[in-house]
Length: 387
Ligand SMILES: *Cc1c(COP(=O)(O)O)cnc(C)c1O
Image (cartoon, helix red, strand yellow):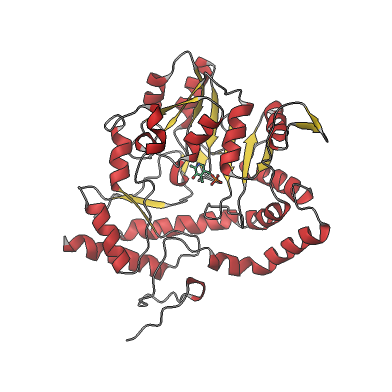
C-alpha cells in the first residue's frame, strides 16, 4: 500500500497509517478553538490595547483563580517570571540560590541574571525532582532561596522544602513552567511557595501563540514588586522608583490565553488519559511514577530506558517507525559548557547524570488518539525485542 505523506495539520489518525506521529502536535488543538481565538485576536486589535491592558488584567485574575493564589502578574516569558520572582524575593549579588541541575537551562540562568550564585543539587530518581536531603546539605549562611522545579508536570516534594525554608529563613520560588494545574497534597503548585513561576511557551500545557509567562503569589507586597519590575519600575508613568525591565505581556497573548485557560482542566484530563493508555500498554521501559499525594499533569510522558546506549537505540528505531520523541534533558546543567563557571564535574550529581542518559519523552498532547498511542506502544515493544 502506498502512503501519501501529509503535513501534520491534516494527519490521519488511523492505527494502520504509516504517517509519522510527531512528539508534539499543536495544530489539532488550534483547529478545535480557531473561531474563539480569532474572535479574541480581533477584540484586541479593534480595541487597540497591544501591551498589557484589560485582556491581560482579566487573564491574571482568571489564572490566579485557577492556581488558587491571591495574586498573578503576567510577563513576557517564563524566564522573565523566574528573573522577577527572584528579584522580588530580594536575591542579588553575594546570595546563593539552591536549584536542581536536571532542568531546562532557564531555571539556572535566571539566578545568574540577578547576580546571584546557583547552587545545584541532585534529584530523586523516581520523581525526577529536587532531593530535599541534598538541599539541606547545600544550605550555607549565604543561601537566600530554594528554587524547586516541578519537572515534566509533577510537583517537587514541597513539604520538606518548605520546612527547610522556614527553619533557615529562606524564600521558596517554584518553577512551575511545566506544571499548570499540578497538585501537591490537594493544593495547586504556584500557590505553595512564596512565588510561583509559569511559562506559556507554545508547547507548555497552557501555551500562548507566542511567548508569555506569569508570577503567582499570596503576598501582596511581592506581587506589587513584580508588577513594578515588569514595567520599568514605574509607580506612575515616567516615575521610576526602581530599575525595572520591559517584561510586559502582550494584549494578544492575554486574550488568547484567556480562551485556552477555559479548556485547561479538560486538556489535563486528556493528558492523564493518554498517560493511562501508555501505562497499560508499555513494557520493557521504566514508566513515570505519580507520587503519593501529587497530581501529575504530564507536560511530557517521560520514560527511562536503562542500559548503556539502549535509550538512543530506541529513539532511532522509533524514528524509523515514524514515531517522534525528545530527550529532556540530554545534558544536565552542571555539565553544560555554558555553566562550566560553576565548577561542577562529571560524577558530582549521579542521579541527574543517570537520568540524562536514560530519559525519553514519548509523543504527548491532549488530543493524541488511543490508536496512535497503541502504535507507539507496539513500535517500542518491537524495538526492545530486536536488540
Ligand atoms: C519552559 C521553561 C522555562 C522557561 O520558560 P520560557 O517561557 O521559555 O522563558 C523555565 N523553566 C522550565 C522548567 C521550563 O520548562
